[in-house]
Length: 392
Ligand SMILES: Cc1ncc(COP(=O)(O)O)c(C=O)c1O
Image (cartoon, rainbow, N blue to C red):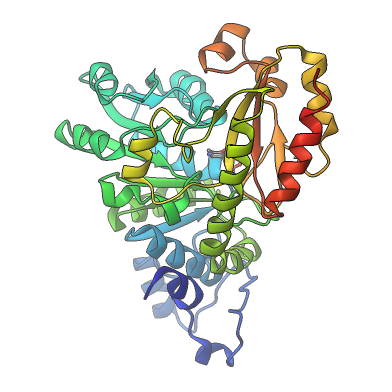
């Protein structure tokens, strides 16, 4: 089955639910058994049996099967948030005293989890690299390195890592690899096929796509995912609610369509911004001007709708006027939904980071991140144009 057909039909057996066109929502906390032997057998197969919904639920499982198939993984495990999935994947791989090499522009809370939480609680050290050159990863390896953590394209400035080359380096050194693939989604990028061990996502972004749920997923080989399911997943309890899985199943049916439209709209918007006199620079891997455009073409088949740009002015009053004058781009932190959003990293980062660390991430007060939604691209451009005209 091709992707679109698989997302519509995979794992669905209408005969078992009266021909209903939408699979049922199993909104229950536990499952009962006819006999001692029945529950005894279920305990022998904890990773697959349905006993209690913290461990597994048929609605959640159906969404997991579709996502595993979409990403080309043997198995997927859904969590209550992207951070629950990412922290479980990290704790699965790491032991006290290990060393990690990670990309410096990864999602902020992932950076904090590695650099603050795991460092303090488990004496795990992380070396951060820009990730733009494979030699940087190689130079950062130590005898204790257990994991290389990627996010390509990375948050904020959308720089890429050569995924295949990093996977080769890692496997030659018996090092595990994890990638956050939330930006490209498995529609445009398939890291597992490039040799990465575990793929993680914030499903709250494109996979769900309607800004009505928060969820996360880890995808990989059966052995890894089963270990996570019976350990970090069940013990820490970060499970996904069946209702949210049911919404996610709905969302997955339109994922290929939505991604195509996000890409088309974002390319339009990015090209408009790139030629505008009041814009200094646009960061979008889909533009020929992106410094790693060729690498993007090699490892992705398309581009999503999240991009950033720098206004030419550094005057904060002017910058605020620009943001506040937008009518269709609403101000908000997330991305990947149907709606267009704008966010200035300075709003949160300058509360949490000293100015030098903020600048070291390649950011400034004039940096704007936009999530290009599914509205008409001409309307979005008109909105940006009228707001840019407010700038002196
Ligand atoms: C790249 C990336 N990864 C992970 C996450 C965390 O996902 P969640 O908010 O679902 O916990 C986010 C959230 O914004 C993100 O942008």
